[in-house]
Length: 224
Ligand code: UTP
Image (cartoon, rainbow, N blue to C red):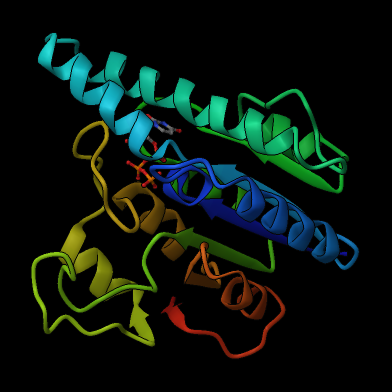
């Protein structure tokens, strides 16, 4: 059976307001797809993680402690998501090794160790299980040529070379709670493992399904 790893941003799972109907629809899409693919989901921390990290930073906590707080939030989000999917594990794995060993049709996890985001966990797991596809489901429609929050004329890229992303963003981890489309350590693994990676808006379930099932989708393909 083919396998897919999906890194879902915390902001997709929980925005300002809890969206129960969206979560149920996302869960049922994954259930449908799990008949054809083994699915691994890594859930991010979103705004709650960033708010907690901001508070800890104001209280002068060190970076490792801030990362650990972020990890706990990603794992709490993962627990919420796992519990609405009947076909998934209920105990959240602490490492990609543990996740790989689970035989549930849909395996859900959060963060693992300090020094990177859940995108890197997704890339590491995709490499480990030899995934056919790695999807980054975020809260924007794809990767842009410049920050769309700052520039009105930012254009969404249909394709981008991994080397260009590495040139622009590097491969190191800067600080806890840094909100980037893909973090540096994840880019490094994607390049090394030659992972087929798509970036898509996780809120747009039709586009997410298109990306997973190999149909054309509105998003960005990363060329490795
Ligand atoms: P996220 O993966 O949510 O990071 O982890 P993000 O890119 O800031 O947020 P999204 O993608 O919009 O949801 C939240 C924070 O938790 C720590 C990092 O500090 C990260 O910024 N973290 C997470 C780790 O240190 N290790 C992990 O494996 C996961």
